[in-house]
Length: 209
Image (tube, rainbow, N blue to C red; front, side, top):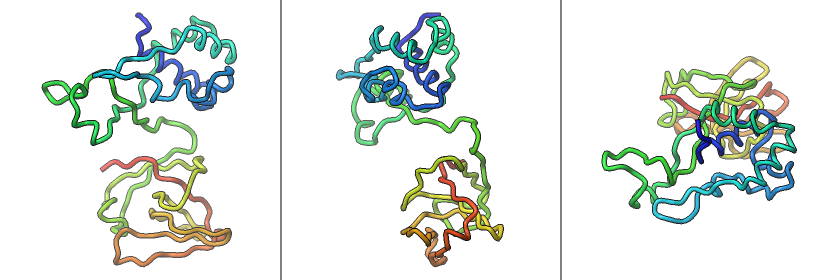
């Protein structure tokens, strides 16, 4: 099968995943600009946007840096499973060239929204209360990433306390000793927990409704 524009970029993403790093880190390892493989660099101007291909030199430098043969890369590009969905801003979605006459997304011109792929630290919890209504309803299933340390105020998180209580909340102001958890349902007041009483806190990365 030919290595299409989409397959080559998927192959680079798959190679970065195999190495346990981001596409930006993969580019940096090869001595390239860290933004070389960003989704925004994969299409150029035009209506619809024109596909941009990584240079042969860039691909070969990446393969050399990761000790990967061209045949291995071709197999990865051909087999790479697309764990993403088409992404377009609402304002841009009103422009011509991104949807077919049937209202379906066209193949080119979109960025991508990554879907969570199965990996260590990723698990699902089912919502059984209404403290986060209307965002989360009883029966909704959220996916949390226990290994994602990029938790900051405003994130939706799952928290498990040393006493065994597990909560789904919005993270409020934090200090070195305290964490405030906010319910979207105003019937529930904010809760403040001691960090010492928290077993783990994980960012919610997906919800199935």
